[in-house]
Image (cartoon, rainbow, N blue to C red):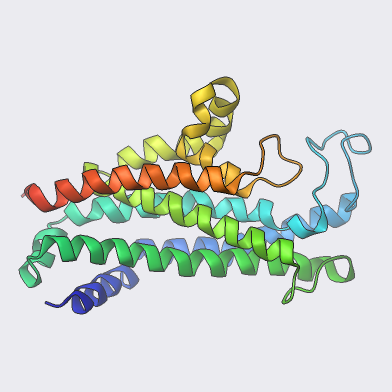
Length: 261
């Protein structure tokens, strides 16, 4: 099979998988609803609220350009879980054995899988984040930005957030593919998403080099405790992906396809 046909086959498998549609529902449907809830909360306490005026607030309200991005944090967890499951599922129920009956060129197959997860993550991430931010500003009405035009800063942070989703999902996919088990990427990444990454970055000098902590550098808004340094965060995540990809590629092309009968 040609590389194009192999890639098309991988996309078909992806679109027809239950995991894809679960993630689609969570980040395209549920996450924007959370954006509406965020907007309602903002309207109820006021867009200029501070911890001094509202003691329940942990931090001051960000500038208008950053509204909606707190709701967009929701999607990181399901899409990272989906990435790990997608990588590990290749060794489940002999999926990889079946695929290799059609194409035994492992290098092409590895590249096709990586390209498939990359393109699909780019698409669903951008759409989800844009809809979430836009619907937040729709709910804010005249107090918000134009939901279609937004602002230069908002578009920039949509790009940063999309990049963070992509890098973490690809890393999760590669770890799942390498270890042939979805538990490994979940144990490694999910606790970091649940604030462990931020905690370790604050308490341990090397903690900021963990994947999720590095991602926080990419998406940090002005009111966050950690700095906004997208170049540093992107470089750290790319290094994680590069070394994971090298090991996963070697394992994928040299080892047995595995699977229990």
